[in-house]
Image 1: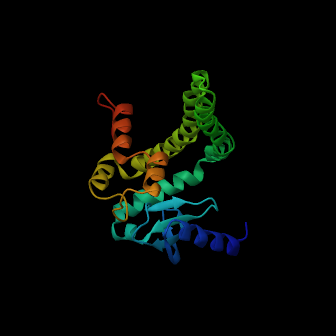
Image 2: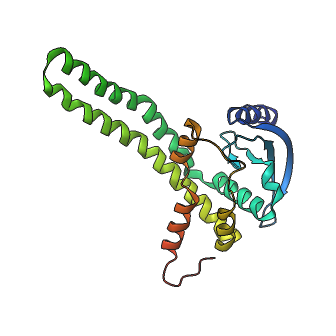
Image 3: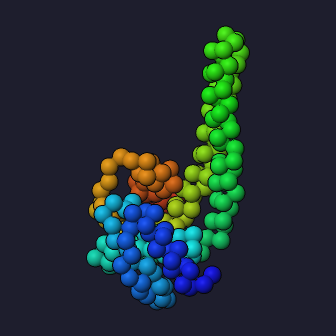
Length: 211
């Protein structure tokens, strides 16, 4: 993809997440390699960093205030860049878009048919539609959680488990936010840091090295 086009698309992406373009710069990864990133600002952004659909990495400017935090964010997003299997989420999302509305419609239609015909048999389709629609939505969300956990685990191996704990005790978000639809979507696609910690500890239980 053309570099100029990627830059324009990245700026549009920043606008969609309530971020403002600040600069483009090269940062050094913990392994010594260099990575070009786009730095953005914004008080209501839900992310400290993202690997965008346009193969660019965007990082909130607040991450640069703490070297450990920057190492975590850049390692996490670089891990996403290396996840070749991340593209499997596209057909899963298409499945939700194409199929879930139909099952939700089936549930709503069953209510109308029940009222119109006074036949309670139609109401059996209500839970069926809800359950199938919920399952369709849950599958890509679970896949997204797996992607995030994998990226976090790679970051933990780089920065150390104790450092991750210290960062978790401080804010792993650029700012506090109120309950909103964006916050709900963030939870559906990103496991809380506490969940990541518990899973990591479970996988490395019984005296195994946590760093």
